[in-house]
Length: 307
Image (cartoon, rainbow, N blue to C red; front, side, top):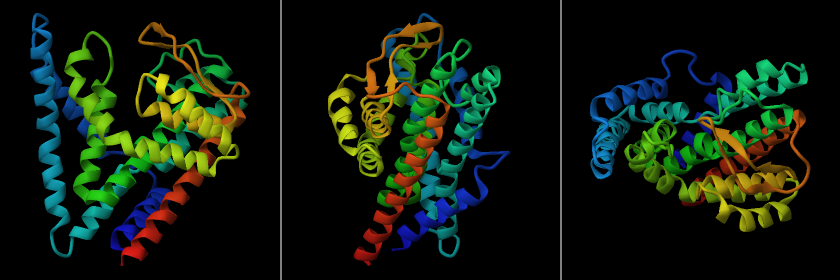
């Protein structure tokens, strides 16, 4: 029951305070990762296997110490609970996700495409310079749905299962994947370990997230059908179920071609229905919020039952 109450407390803290505006630990960790990359990446003539080995070493150097320290601090008497609560609060980004999405929607509703492109560029990795309203809305909704898993439900899952150490490992691995998990010439080998670790840690949370979108969405049957039919063809084993179920739940047509790092990628369709518009961004946010309250209810009931 204590773990369940910590989950509820961390979510309420996030809703009240949002992310730290300065000195966020994940931002600092990202800077540390970039400095380590500069040290261990190696010269251009390295073999693919050697590059991959250096990536594995970099992941271990970054993740093992922080995970161990988090676990040890959480076991300390008196302050352990505060440490665990604080670490989970820092791992959850529900309010930040809403704020970023609402900023894009507000810019679109004001017919300020330039500002909307700037705002959506903060939350997606695709090229945004030439996106129209539909493209901006599509990118934002896909990011909201996917980051619901990465920034909320995955963190709650690993904290409930393994405590402070697990949530720190999960969020730091997720951050490394965001930095190195690209299939570009630079990161195809070096980022292999970060990408595979994130895939493994997110496998079950992603499917639970997809199930949540299916249960709380306005079109549950369509969400289930899109999840089962479309997710297997998506390049990411975890983003596919999450976004297909979310798109189906909202009755929207997402996916399709998108430009990343100057190159167009032919992505399969996600969902079914109307093309997205600015108003649909708020619908996606509400879907994630309903799923969050479902998760909290299940965690609290589970904690009460186990107690």
